[in-house]
Length: 239
Image (cartoon, rainbow, N blue to C red; front, side):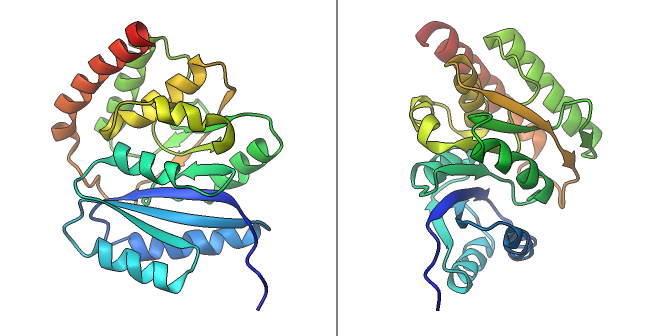
């Protein structure tokens, strides 16, 4: 049996109540990764699930030795994502979404990173070339948040959420500086990377969600607004 290749890329996927799509999405991702000739690992960061997500995640880890399962006691996307990044072994990390796992993003982002053309690649739903087939209110929420980030903290890009790939060795210190969890950890990470002078490149996405959001959009708004105010203080005042 051949020796496993050294881990060059870590794929971090937060999961919460994903029993319907978890197994199939990871299996499809594993199949898509066969086109690449380097070692990789998948970290499933389960956070607060109340369905069969945990059992399915461990089933995948038993089947695939390169799959690891982490646990967070409560639903917290940002904390789960940060934890996965912190234990990653790869020189490069892709932050994926279980309802996306877009192979085209991997094909475009990996060469950019491996060739040193950017420190971070953001898959933007808001670029003119992107195709965002999510429900109308989800698209409005994305545009509203990005507009508030541009106004509040001087964000220069078009999107902070969704798929991201980055050079872990260069940006690990940026991750450790991030203070927010929940939905705005990803935004803080992208914005700090940009403001600290690292190279951030955006590429278009084709977004078609496989299921409705696991947490209701309207329930997330009050918390997101509070965190946005905290982010303004963290970036503008505390630095």
